[in-house]
Length: 560
Image (cartoon, rainbow, N blue to C red; front, side, top):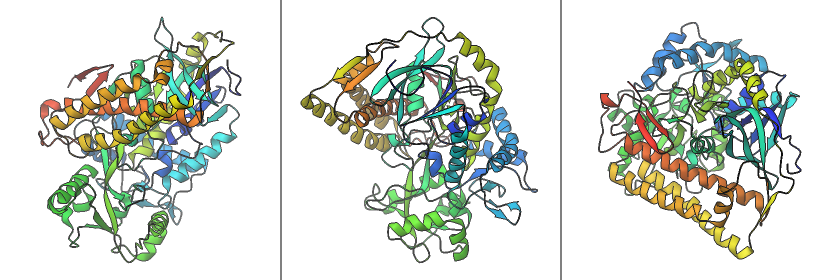
């Protein structure tokens, strides 16, 4: 094995260090040796960016049954009721577990403070100011770093699953780390890599969200579900030069108004709940309004006016939003914020049961990477952090399963002489230019063809383009080398800026596959439902109240 400071075998490998990966690692029994792999450091993930909060029925006037009802309604007929019941019923105890670990949720006196978000029938969203995700992940990270049985492997990139040839069991991964590719065995692999928002030109997701887990699992033969369902958050900061910073739904829950250039609350034209309608409805309302009223809808925005909220409450609840807006020259106390929709959350993912198992033995999926059935066609606000915690906790129950699989994994003989990959400067510059061009063009294409509103001809044209780009990518010298690697073959690289370039290559490959999967799934579903809206099929179709399933390159409908 290449001379790095990581072992050749773990009991469990967890890929991803957001809320799902961190909590999964903490919930695994302490007598298991756990490797926690993250592309960045343990503090950078989409969970860290989650502002609004985490939903749980903990108030006296609330109940899990009401939480279930709201979640089912938001999911537009595609939630798995048993999964939703499990999520809502486990939520209060999971919140208590987070409090016990030290998560400092806001309080009113001794009681946990609760706010309202769109499509919730009760105040049930716990929060830590407007940086709830950061509070949760910071606390979980501190706990992980104290655990003797967890080894955190930072700035490492999982490239592929390592399947046992005879049984098809997942027995580990190939890992790019410290300039080398090595093969790491494990009794179980847990994919918790988050979403794939970077496949869209406009997204609230951080740069790490490139759909890695879904792409890696798909290439290994995992069954995926409902990949066309992408939630577009209606209110992302939209200012030239600024990142698409998410302005939390809780802002509207506390009383902010969504207005157009004339100051009119136009969202009521599209839904009786106005700016508190479900996210997909509000996103389409903004999209449609800008199509009708803006000279250039692609760059236009509407306004989110926080001034109806008392100033003291803004300071208490939204200090981070105040700070970010100030950085971009916006005074939220005296002027509205320019906002427009952006890709936010992927409802689809790797099919997983209530104990996170996939169709590949030894492979588990948790969080946004997974499709457990809790979100259906449209996720209810603040159920995402909750899903990470509730399902991460489930890994505690598969101890015997993991130990049995660990015993079935045999030690491997590693090549003592790693392969070496070398490119000249000219070859490398040419290849880098091609990858950079793909990385720039792909998100624009997907945003235009599979964004908030979709139709068949645009989807088909985009699919053909992506297939051509996939072929161009596979023809690159680096691609030819890496795609021909056999399991257990370690590699050393002699190329400029190796760490950055290998990550760029791997993420671009994953984004190309994710784009293909979203586009094909969106073309397959000939109706509108939840986060999937077709201009040519604008109504829900009862015949489509089923899931879209895909394995390899075969798409089919689930049983009703």
